[in-house]
Length: 173
Ligand SMILES: [Fe+2]
Image 1 (cartoon, rainbow, N blue to C red):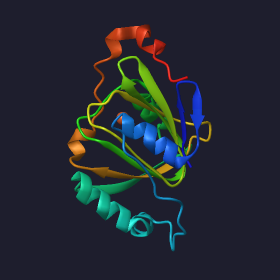
Image 2 (cartoon, rainbow, N blue to C red):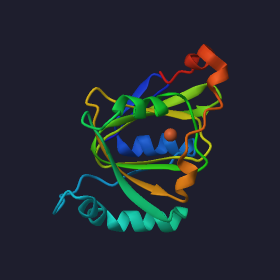
Image 3 (tube, rainbow, N blue to C red):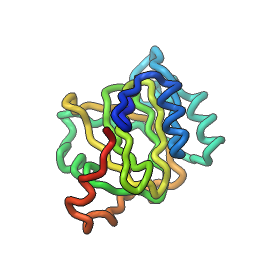
Image 4 (cartoon, rainbow, N blue to C red):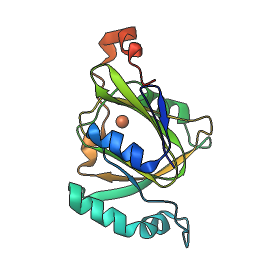
């Protein structure tokens, strides 16, 4: 289950995490870990089919896929470097973690972030245009379901690079 670090607190209770994130317009749901008949892409999507359909209807997503990153992924460090700098997208970044873990640092105000560690069973939506960054934990492994309104909106945009080290003063603890 997820961990949320914010203003010196470390939350692990799903209801508390949901409440804090909702305050800042960040949807979070605990879908839980389910037994899968098979671990293929189709098997994963089938296992979470009802929640996927519901979320698509609620938030106008039209397509989904499954992505996996682990140390065997070609150019893993290059891929990850794209997302460890602050950026945003013009589409929501929707991630349901099936396996592994990853960390999102998401702006909630101009100078504050939350640090959200996604673990198996967690669904999070980084809203479109919201400043954030993402990296893997030392396990360097994650498998996620992604939902999209428009895959072209998934390109990362980096309007924050000019701010240099100033952006590193943002804090979540
Ligand atoms: Fe992103």
